[in-house]
Image (cartoon, rainbow, N blue to C red; front, side, top):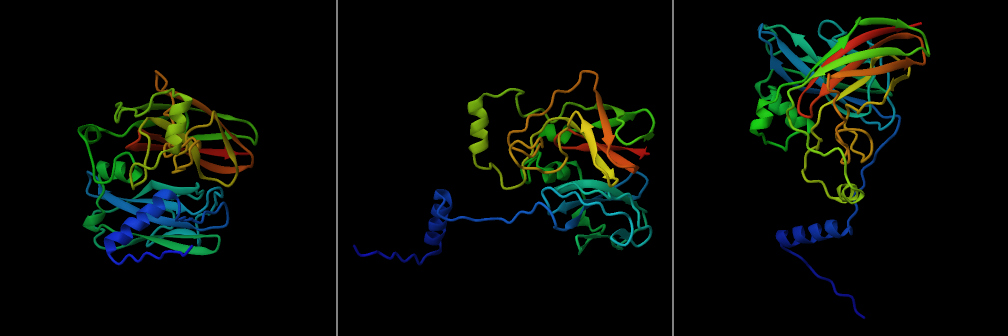
Length: 310
């Protein structure tokens, strides 16, 4: 039997053929992913004005690893310039994409200068350049869109009415403990109930399988709306165990990874009094900064405590 060769000369025909290969699985596209050994890419997310005339520059990062959480102390490998090297940036980096992680305040007369964050992780140096250019101006709709709460370029009356949750840590902001002795952290979270939860708290096995197998519904990152609290290490080189485990604040898109960016994630139940009780246990001595983030799906609020571990 003689093989037939079909020539497709038009652009439209080639596009249709490519779409056919993709839809039928005939064309495989493989992305390289890494567990360890890769660098961390600092990111300038934008800026927003303050009532006193100053500005907040917003930064995040992309840790190219799925597992490794590098620790990079303030200094030659983790610094800002010009001015103070320490601008409140993390020294412990969670996996993958972390957006709008922290903000740096610059004065009203900052002008057209650049604020540069330099990171060197696993021997690779990268820089993020903060600037007050008008096209980097950020508001709540930009944050909600960039983090996946909204579709690209969309909004709604609900999203425009949303205000960030408020997280308050009860008790001292500085604690002292010993290795292996848990510290109890009591956190109050207030929220306006917007955006509304997008998922029911229970699903049938058939519904879970359907969600796992369906194709992505948008080209941008997707996030499940629902209020949650997360505690993580912000600075400190030991392992900290948070009990009970809380949702991840980073974009873990795997189906069952306890992350709002995972397709099967369900928002946790909210305590009626807004009080969350967790314990933090440390495996090494040192000084740690723990970071709390309350996130309603679209917007967020942060709080921090320092723990000295003997």
